Length: 171
Image (cartoon, rainbow, N blue to C red; front, top):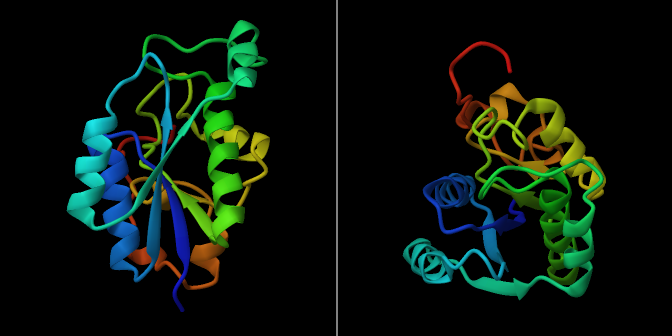
């Protein structure tokens, strides 16, 4: 059974690895790059996507994002570490694109515990919930350390072929 994923692509290695893992499961992937005025890695995004043979759509943030930045419900992150509300905003953009194309799930390169303010287990679950994607976000690099997603339970993605990074104590 084949499925289509919308991949949040930042231009970093983790998101590209996540895409490749999903491709190896026979899924089609459409990349989504959320353009931020203060983060300009768009060229890396398109080079990486081309290397993986996937199309990418880039979407600009809207005015409502500026409002979110003024008073994020869950506080601020540090530096390039986006706050929980910012991540949920990007997830909602991915959910909208998923609906447009008839996609089945969202994939990200997030790694459990990699960023202390937005990649703790509780926070990853909260972000997906805030976007209305509770069981539809696959994080293949840490999947075995997180609850199974819908596509794993349906056998579209083989959980045994996903990863459990980090290999340290429970986070």
